[in-house]
Length: 198
Ligand code: SF4
Image (cartoon, rainbow, N blue to C red; front, top):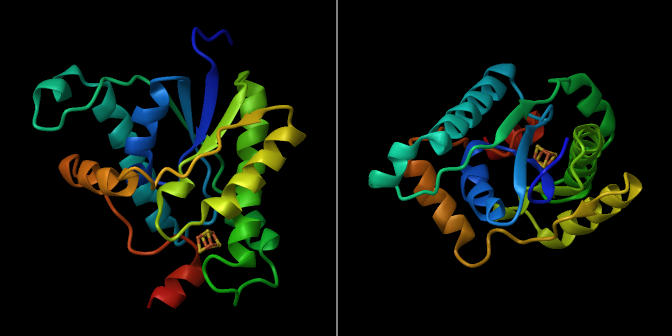
């Protein structure tokens, strides 16, 4: 595939996190979004988050948004859903079930998802890899960026290092998801984060 701007495959964890990041990265890159999140359980919750991503992709393509109260540039990006394979994900975090959020289980979870995203980036002919994950105040860029960099290098790609929560990124993402009426989850995604949240 041939891109006018550098092609970037963005791992999107959910629509509220993706909205602001897609708009920002679109200034510099030809953005393709890949929703690969087999960590999310139960499947109904996965469905809700995927539907919200589809809704966001539709909304960002609409020119009318520019005239509505939500001032967003028109962004036409390709959105793909990866395979929903929670069994493989559970294998990847085996033995780490009782780790606290932000610990070794999350490290394994980030790596597992980014490896698949990198594989798909190669298949699509993108040179760059990025993730929306760092926009969350619960997620540490110091942990995510080195994993992203390492995975990208393994696949001969470049990783877009960022901490998207900075410069009011998280605040903007909350405002956008409210205004675009996007589904917003109450826990990170896996059954263990749901358990700990309860
Ligand atoms: S808490 Fe979130 S990042 Fe950590 S393992 Fe669970 S789904 Fe993955």
